[in-house]
Image 1 (spheres, one colour):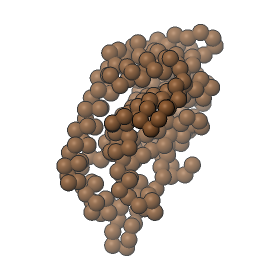
Image 2 (tube, helix red, strand yellow):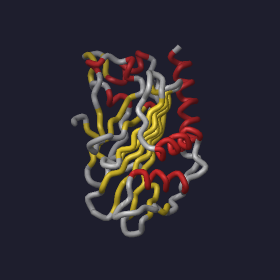
Image 3 (cartoon, rainbow, N blue to C red):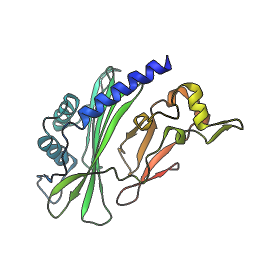
Image 4 (cartoon, one colour):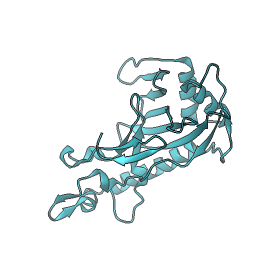
Length: 236
């Protein structure tokens, strides 16, 4: 059963990732148009949407909803939109089946010359999650942004979400293997998803299968903002 589940998860991950990367930027400079002294999160959303069209269906809906402003959830299976100009964050969440989250936020870099924008897309919320995250660096002088590699010092593996030694006889890898979640030959990078900060600066990292693991075995992990990118940490 677990093997079939993992095959389904892998198929979903590949499908979502192919949609998420379909409108690749190829390193091109994207113009950010705004009024006032600096762009707002909605200006970044508009630049992302117009320059990377056509968006996939979920992103297209998310952008349209975000452009309309805040919309609180109404009921357990409703849709909601957050647009927080002060904290530079916005999101669209559809609690349907599968639950879908698309969120964006930006950070002011320590060099005073750039900002970092993240676009995060998560599918299957409430079940087995999958998704992808993209980053863009905005140059204040030229008013343009370009897609960059994820500014992470290290991308965690599922075994890092588990205490290193479960028992004297069983380490983290053996424990996950015994649950049928991973095996040593499997690419497990797709089992990690993210949540952008609504407030603060750090990104929360999620292990997609953590509901199968008792809380006492789990390790909370975050990407801590370092002024130009993120450093993996288990403390917040």
